[in-house]
Structures are given as structure tokens and as C-alpha cells.
Length: 76
Image (cartoon, one colour):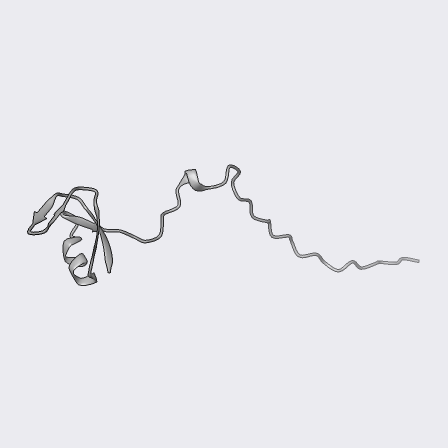
């Protein structure tokens, strides 16, 4: 099954779909309806929105420069 969101109203014998309504259809039939004019495919996962993120932005650690081994120089 695939989900589509209707962009236009469609009705027939035993069904009526309004704009914005989400309809479950078999995959091939959903692909035919989801032509960008009558309907569009609906993703199952919710897209991340700025409202859903934490108040403070996430910080990543900076890569530390490689340290050279310490050498001693002795003079007489």
C-alpha cells in the first residue's frame, strides 16, 4: 500500500476524496494517481522542521591538530 495526498476533489461510485485528504492505495494505482495534478505521494517519515530541533544548535567537536612528539635539545 502507498499513501497519496489529494490535490483535487475526486468522486465516483462508493468514494469521494477531497483536496488534502490522504488515501491509501495499492502501489501501482497510487503511482498513477500521483501525477502532481490530481495527487502527490506521501512519505511515511516526517520531515525535520526547525520547530522540532533543540533550542541550542548542535555543536560538533573540532578536530585537534596532530601533536608532535616532544624532543629535548641539549647543549654543552
